[in-house]
Image 1 (cartoon, protein in one colour):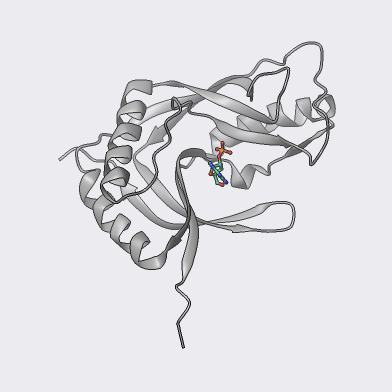
Image 2 (image 1 turned 180 degrees about the vertical axis):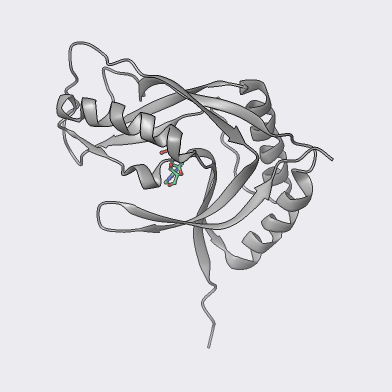
Length: 191
Ligand code: 2AM
């Protein structure tokens, strides 16, 4: 009898500080009434996605962990602030609402490129679209039409997030949401 291979739905992301999330929380609470057709994501699930891995076999995940431990050695910590509010693909056809980032975007970009190289070596599919760092705060509900307020709200974050590791998360899909569990963190420390 064939044994089913265990697969884990997972992704790599940057975690945000509680203080930074608090700032975004007040902003999100203030705009919810203006976006009735959107489902807002609880702040406990906010993160900056670096790469969505999808359902991957456990052995492949273990191999990736080894490569990440080794491959991120050259990366150094950096700081970002959460800043800006936008929509994908754009405000007119919005399906996803996000909060953006500013700060050390160059090291963040380098980190993303390094990750892509590691992932490519292990035959993971790489995103060909330009990396647009963001924190997803809301998604358009089911078949709703996107109706947006006449004026786009503005968000300017001030809290500094010191990023000294990335996190591998397991994702379990629930009825209307998802449960994210950190599996391992990978430090960014220049050696
Ligand atoms: P997002 O940051 O644009 O929302 C966990 O599901 C994370 O992986 C989400 O934050 C999501 O991106 C990202 N992701 C990217 N591609 C995905 C996909 N095809 N299915 C689910 N999540 C995906």
